[in-house]
View 1: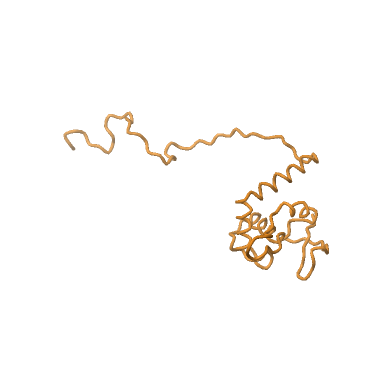
View 2: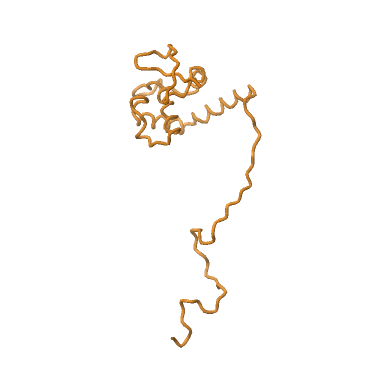
Length: 153
């Protein structure tokens, strides 16, 4: 699958088709996602930079499993920006709205298979694996091994 890569100095309107490990969203996909993302128009502070770059930084972080601080700055900008935008979008429900919208589009196009597989696997834990205390109860033995019989040894 070809992914779009925008090298230094290129414009987003120019399509350069190369494979890049940092780019995940094609132009067609981005056109469907971009209108669903909030902007900071009318808010005080520094205006949002390239939303696509930040969203791809979030995707890269989750795909690789790296800590936020290790997100490549040269590709996605400061890790703090990527983290803050993800936190903001998660907190205000943006990701939920994007998912719901994209699922609705895919379902309307017949691209979603709603069959569900249920796994009835049972995992048993050893009785001592719990982190709870046991109520005082008789263990069944008359004299515990660590106790000496009355009258002493």
